[in-house]
Image 1 (cartoon, rainbow, N blue to C red):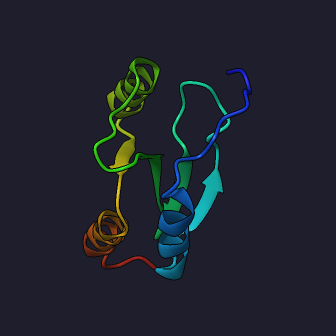
Image 2: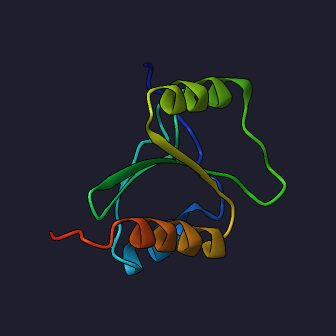
Length: 101
């Protein structure tokens, strides 16, 4: 994958802040072309995260990446709001009750 100068969506900093506040570890990968924006690590689960502004949608390249990720059984999420970030963390938490760090 090539690097390119990518601008993060305006809501990305607040979503990252919330994911981290809730205990998630976040890696920024938004500078990779046709890739997701973030890698989220939480309770032994890795999720590829695309951040979009409300009303935004995946580009063709981002959708191809999503399909590839999901076809390999990996997790992928599109987050547009802080509430969606909370719901993602809550869902992981509920599905990993026996997790021990």
